[in-house]
Length: 266
Image 1: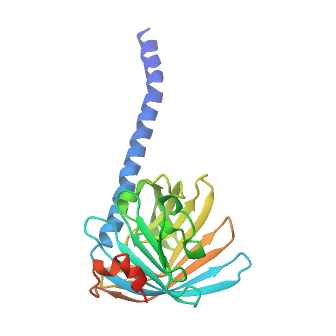
Image 2: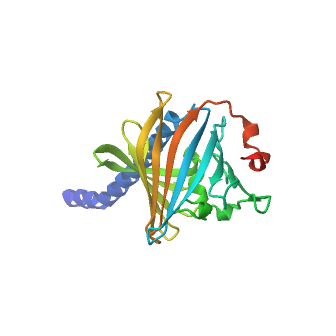
Image 3: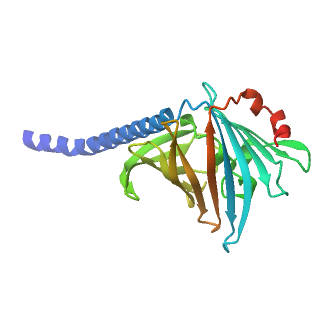
């Protein structure tokens, strides 16, 4: 009888052990995902400020293209997210348009858009951050710096992408007004840079895929992709961002990123 009771106790214990292991695995994967995200952040900290020229190529579902030329200035902020200013130079119908973003580690970002035709600065409301940036397949929230605190994380697995050993990490936006339920990111295991992100919309349906191409290293430390390619699977539209002529530590200050800088942008 004692053997029967012992076996019966073991059978009852099995589901508890299975659940405990699942909880342990989930906690461990969350911790590892966060650890990877922190390492990505650390390796890209300390560049201080930068400026880069870029071209935006927008394609509709028929493959027809339109192009825009821009400049992007970025300033690191101690204890908070980056400040960035995007200035449109061409074509004429968008020339002088400027976008200013203050990314925050916690809480909603502050974003403003200057429209020269109206000669006014428009604040981007928090519930509009998921909207398209200047008609592109990038949302306003995609343009912000990707601070660690913006997400919770879960390590999924290791996998090769185009011959590169990667960590696959799933991240979940903290902001309830985000346009995404989750994102799946492929991080380089050696350089800790992203190679691919898959975005899922608020219904958890596949929405977009972002791929990074032609990385170059600057200041012997910081990696920057020369091309971002965003493909919208629901609309069959796409947007490329082509970057060139990066310059770092050129003396930018907070004054270059105040709201008046939007109107001064040339």
